[in-house]
Image (cartoon, rainbow, N blue to C red; front, side, top):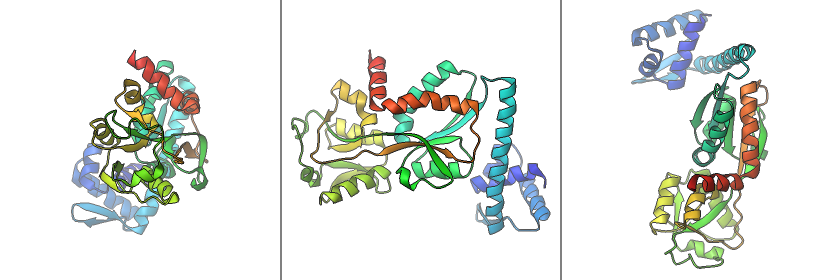
Length: 311
């Protein structure tokens, strides 16, 4: 099989678009189409079907895509292994963090890692947790930090390390709840909460916990971004249950107030996952070594970093 044609097919399959694949590969669209046709002739199977401007994979195309991902992942591992023999300090790491950890935890990790290993190239993606799990299963990442229950980890993946985040209720200093020592959990049905969208992992967790207390949630409105939620709360629009990682700076500045809620227990797990059958390069192992103490200390590490940055 012509591996160059296979490489081009994989790019088309991942983007589901011939023109975009051609642009990324710096080839003409007719050239890409010709190479896909040539590959189809090699395997005696139809691999793609056109659907308007996009393409769809046939069953054979989906099978070939999966094997191609494994093949080129192994190629990258081979290149990394050979590069490590030439330069132990070099190499590449492909990783992804979920959106909360990617915004509030990742900068601290990358800063410390770059100070120790400036020659290592980092390829970083910020994705939601299901996307990270799928990318790991597709051999596209060395590891990923996801918000997930370790008991439902796919069998192909293993958890390297984990820590707990905490979801806390925050309000502006002018909010009617700001002076309370403890807020009854039943008060959360008063329509004061600004929530993430219904598909959000955090939203689902909040709803399940409140359902356990027989509290029906009535949101003020929903937003799709943590920063937008936080700014609304700072402006006094409403209250929010949000990751403690994300509000340390605002709590220290007095822009937000943490209001404890009776009997509310919201501690999502952050798990570093990788494929159990994938070789981990020395560069990736070094990144894990930097990440490990930060995950171990969790909020304390974030608070210390915030304090240092604010001085």
